[in-house]
Image (tube, rainbow, N blue to C red; front, side, top):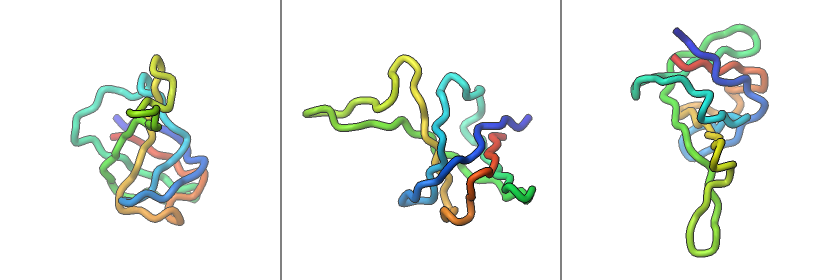
Length: 98
């Protein structure tokens, strides 16, 4: 059954596609298979195919190493969708995990 991940507030370009925001709390993600995909529903109702999701934990430099950039007790993940341009994912787009 599809699971609503987020409604896009803004996007950022990434080397492989777009990073959609807001971030997602790790504890909110349902258990899914590794081959799960995301579907996007544009504000006009158009549904775009299945894309491979890439979830990442934001990190930052902490002296000689790296540290998680969100609350380590309640980490947030960013979602990158490969193969899309920022103009293809306007604010208000829904992202669904299937």
